[in-house]
Structure formats: C-alpha cells, structure tokens
Amino acid sequence: MASVIEIKNLTKKYGDLLAVDHVNYTIEEGEIFGLLGHNGAGKTTTILMLLGLIPPTEGTAIVNGVDVIKEPLQSRRHVGLLPENAGFYENLTARQNLLFYAELADVPDKEASERVEKLIDQVGLDDKRGVKVSAYSRGMRQRLGIAQSLVRDPKVLILDEPTQGIDPEGTQDIRKLIRTLSKDRGMTIIFTTHVLYEVNKLCDRVAIMKNGAIAGIGTIPELRKQVNADEGEDFEQIFLRYQGVV
Amino acid sequence: MAGMLTMAKKEFLDIIGEKKFMLIFATLLIVILVSAYQGGLSYSESQSATGSFTFESGQGRGRVGNTTGPVMVFGSAQSLSNSLESMITNFSLVGGVLAIAISFDTINNERQRGSLKTLLSYPIYRDSIVYGKYLGGLLAVTMVSVVSFLGGMGLFISVTGIEMTTDTVLRLAMFFGVSLVYMAIFLAIGLLLSIVLPSPSTSLLASMIVWLSSIQLIPNLGYAIGQILYPVRMTFSQTGEPSFTQQTGFTTLRTIISGLSPSTAYENIVNSLLTTSSLEFTSGTPTVTSISVTTALMSSLPSLLYFVGLLIAIFAAAYVVFMRQEIR
Ligand SMILES: Nc1ncnc2c1ncn2[C@@H]1O[C@H](COP(=O)(O)OP(=O)(O)OP(=O)(O)O)[C@@H](O)[C@H]1O
Ligand SMILES: [Mg+2]
Image (tube, rainbow over all chains, first blue to last red; front, side, top):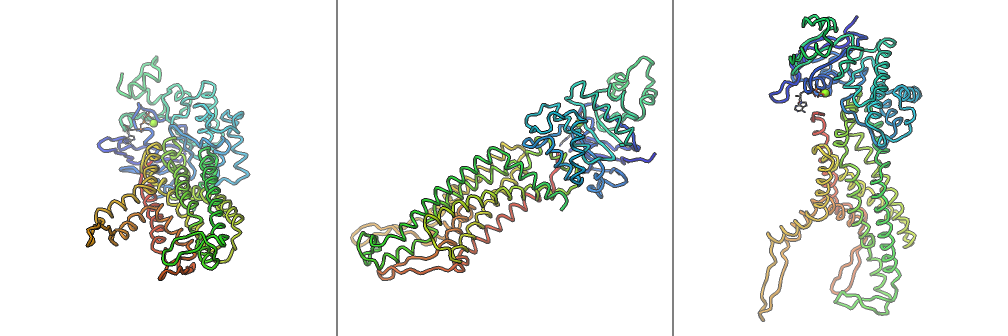
C-alpha cells in the first residue's frame, strides 16, 4: 500500500506553547485512522496543517504526493474536511449550501445536483433539504457538515470529531457510512474523536497524542502490547495509560 | 480566478436574502423618491416662475414683481445640484448605512460561525474569497443604486419634464457612478473592519463610528480646526463699531479637512458635477454663466481622485491583512 499522507517533523508553536511537537508518521491508502488525545493535545492543529490552513512552524506534510507548504492548493484538491464546529450559511438551505461547495470544488452542475441529493439522504437530512440552515438543530448541522466533506468526492477524508452532537442512531449511520466509504471506495479516512468505543469499532490504526507529541501509534493490538496491558483491560484504560493518567 | 465568481454569487444571494438588507433598501428607496419628488417640484417652480420674481438692482435679493426678463435668468440659474441637493444628502446618509450593513461582518461572521475553515479547505485561493465577497457586496449595492436612481430620476424627470440633453444625461450618469464609488468605499470600510476585528458586534460599532465621523465628526473637526488656526478677526471702525471678518485661510482649511470625509467628498463632487450654471452679480446685474460638463468634471477632479484613491487604499489594506491572517 502507498502512503497517502506523510507527516514529516511537523511542528506548530504558539508562542512558547508547542501545540504540535516534531511529529512523524504516515497514513496508508484506504486506512481508517484515528487521531486521539486529551483536549488541547494538538489534534485539530495537526489537521489544519495537513490542509495547509495554518502554516507549520517547522516540518511539512505530503498529501496525495503534494507538499502542503509548497503547493497548498494542489495538495487539498482531493481532500475533504469536516472542521471542528463547522458552520454554514444560515440563509441558505442544506441543498443550496452543498451546491455552493460543489461549485467551489468544480463539480459539474448535473453531477453536483445528483450527488447533493444523495448525500442529503445518506446523512439523514432528507426531510430538511429545502429548509434554511437557521432552523437546524446542532446535530442536523453536524450531519450537513459530513455531507459537505463528501461533496467533492475526495480521496482523503478528514473529520474533526464527526459524531459530536449527533444522536445514537445517527452516530451508527455515520459509522456505517465511514466503513462503506473505506471498504467500497478505498477512501482514506482520518478522524479525531473522544468516543473510544468508536475507535475500537472503526479504526485500522490509531495515533494517541499527548501535549503535541505522539505518545503511541499502531493497531489497537499493537498499542495494547506496547503498554503490556492485561487481558481484561479495555481500550479506555489503555488510552489512559498512554495519557499518563493510569 | 478559481472560485471567485461562485463566491460572489453566493454572497449576493446571502445578502439579498437578509431581512435587514430589504429593510434598509426600502428606506433608501423611499427617502430617494421623496427627495427626488421635492427636488422636481422646486426645479419646476424655479422654471415656471414667470412674472413672480425680479431683482432689485444692486441688492441681489428676490422680490415679487412683474417683469419677465430677469426671471428667466433666475430660472435657468437653478442648477440640477440645487434641486437634487436633498437627494444627494439622503443618499450619502442612507447609502453609507446600507453599504455598512452589508459588509460589517463579511469575514468575522464566517470566522465566528466556523465556515471560514470549510471555505479555505477547498482548492481556491484566499484572494478569491476577499474579491468574491467584495464583488457580491458590490453587486448588491449596484442593484440598490440602479433601482433607487431609476426610481428617483424617473420621478424627477416626470415632475420637471426636464429635457434630456446629452449634457444632462452625462451629468446624471456621473452622479450615479460617483454614488456607486461612494457605496463601494463604505463597503470596503466594513470589509476591512470585519477582517481586523474579531466579532461582528465590535465591527458594527466601529463601522457606525466611521460612518458618523464621515457625516458629522470630520466636517465639524474641519470647522473647529479652521476656527483655531484662523480665528475671526474683529476690527473697529472709526465710530467704534466692531466688524468681523473671516480670514480666507479658514475656508480653505475647512474645505480640505471636511473633504477628507467620504461623505463630504461625495457631496462636493456630485454638487459640482451637477452644477449647470452659476449666478453672479456684476455691478448689480445678475449674470448667469453656464458651466460645461468638462469644466464641472475638471473642477471636481482633485476630490474625485482622492475619492477613488481612498477606495483603493481601504480595499488594499483589507486584502493585505486578510492574506496574512491566521485563520484560527
Ligand atoms: N490560535 C491559537 N493561539 C494560541 N494557542 C492556540 C491557538 N489555537 C490552539 N492553540 C493551542 O494549541 C494547543 C492544541 O490545540 P488543538 O485545538 O490542536 O487541540 P485538540 O487536540 O484539537 O483539542 P480538543 O480535543 O479540545 O479539540 C492547545 O493547547 C491550544 O490551547
Ligand atoms: Mg480539536
């Protein structure tokens, strides 16, 4: 398998604070990759640098073979992003919002409208497609955010806390969607979450961040082994060991 | 440029879909129609005033009389600028408010609701975002201006029956163009403040302060500074009677400082573009000198250059700050 993302010595400093601290790893094509860590560990900062949205203090990343610093525009051409706390244009409907993003991504008109309708169904907003976003609940907005991240039919999908604020049924749908996108379409998916159950169920590999650095990386069995976890310990306990709490 | 037109289109739809926009648009339209109508009436009166005005030689003061000669003179001295004066003032007030209402939260609103990161994650240049959003605002402002001008001018023309000579059409077209630039300036001010200030409520307040400075504070400041540097001279005649003279420097300084305000600059430019003739009294006889479009244009050229320069400078500042800003 080829690596789709190569993170090289990636670093972000805010004053004296090392938000991301000289991080190195690769993510392979078709992988579902979980990025974990305490609040402020540096997950969102990493993601924003992967998209060339904030400049790294040091290091760089190669996404789909393109350097995010040298060619930011080209590097994000095949990447879909669901940002943390994504917002929308309140005066526009779900459909109008998604069509706008499709147009930004240069999706041909006919294809765009078909894709938009399908995505609205997939995220469970079918009865809201013509309603202005100002009348949406938080979970509905999050669902729309997921649809937005897929509107450009990306090769790499990056989701910052995709299931936050979504009800259990919706969460299950989104997990199914992630799995399908990975297995059927070979999409590489990276997501952050605080729901460890989700990680257990979905991820091929996981990176655990602590204070900007990588505290552990690998498959869940590998992570278990590295901290010599007992048979009975669940993933939550293992995670806490990496965070230095236990 | 990739994404710019998409951005502009969305921005335009977003703007005209808002209630506040429609509200201010309606206000502007009403105010323009009313002042155009009144302007039309006063123009007609001055034109058809046959037999009701004359001049007493040497005093330059109108008085009811029966002669016809000088009346025509007075009539044609009523410039477009006099008739449209209140329309101009109203446009400078409400037009500025409308432009600010459109643009004060252009960027910080995107930032605050969390759509800016989404936007920037698409393969578009940052330039396209500022240009596109500004263009969307300009489209909205152009639509507003076209509607209010067509309405206002239509009313003015039908009330006055004024002959649409090339000269008149040219002047009115320039009036329209300068009004667009005026709104574009306030649009750019709002844009800049929405980039520099983190929250929409702060940038709204700041925009309103700028607007107030433009219509009131700067002109007042011009007066005050003029007074301080060139105080009124008091002299006593031989009989001991005091007389006051304004020094010439006062007017110059006051004009320069007031002219820094976009609103005053706008009013000055439009007034001189619409001045078709001037009335002077040479040794007691009123004479009317007509002023050609070219002359009017030349005399407002310095203000016009300042006006356009101001627009470019403010937009350039907004652009530069936005391009360098971190997005989180
Ligand atoms: N604009 C900023 N200025 C200064 N420090 C910042 C800025 N943005 C983030 N930080 C800091 O960088 C660190 C990493 O933040 P980041 O948002 O990446 O954390 P995270 O892992 O995504 O956390 P969470 O789980 O809460 O989303 C934090 O300590 C945060 O305070
Ligand atoms: Mg985060």
